Length: 67
Image: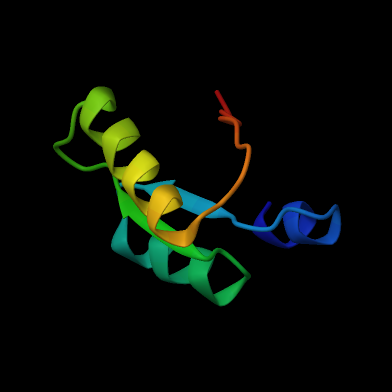
């Protein structure tokens, strides 16, 4: 998905996973940031994302959730 998002013009791609191997794979395939979701609440994850995006001065952004 990271490669697809980049190919479609995404400036910043953030990968989420519980499994450390999947996080490393996301980085390998184009994610700019990865965040472990293991033992974290969704509100804490959103705060982390917002902080990372502010540091990088990313413009508009949205959540793409795969359920």
